[in-house]
Length: 203
Image 1 (cartoon, rainbow, N blue to C red):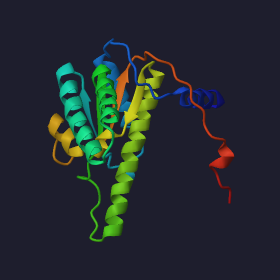
Image 2 (cartoon, one colour):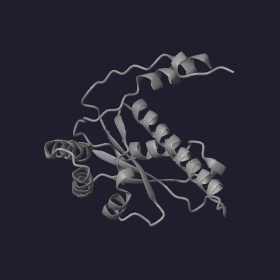
Image 3 (cartoon, one colour):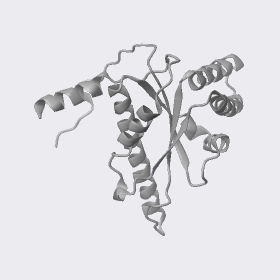
């Protein structure tokens, strides 16, 4: 048991957010393995509210990246951001989305969740759903790392869910939460963590 725990903790420590990939395609069976790992996450009421859209074709990746880029430019222009900064941000986003061999959009649905008449409990149910989907995403990221893949969770869909839903023709109840870029890594990254005592209270 200790040996198993050690390997799991090592996997967690070694995982990094990777944004540059080799052009090599990912086998469909491996993608399905990662998605299966995601679905074994815990979820509120065991309702399993996660939904996934896998984007593999270059044309669809370009379409999605262009649509998201247009919204990004409009939002930043409205904020009064320098045009040069806007173009740099949009170009970086476009490159990340179109260069990754696979994109996996992680969504939630409230279709099977409990419904409450008051705002407080209704809000908590939404938060529980978001937490469930986030745990599924973490499962997927760890499974990808274990399989020798690089991946990065991008929160950009939260800022333009209507754009993402339209570009991918999603079912009406699917709410985009994150976009995972996935591929065989073409970079190495090192990260540290703050000391545990700066993040923990013991009572």
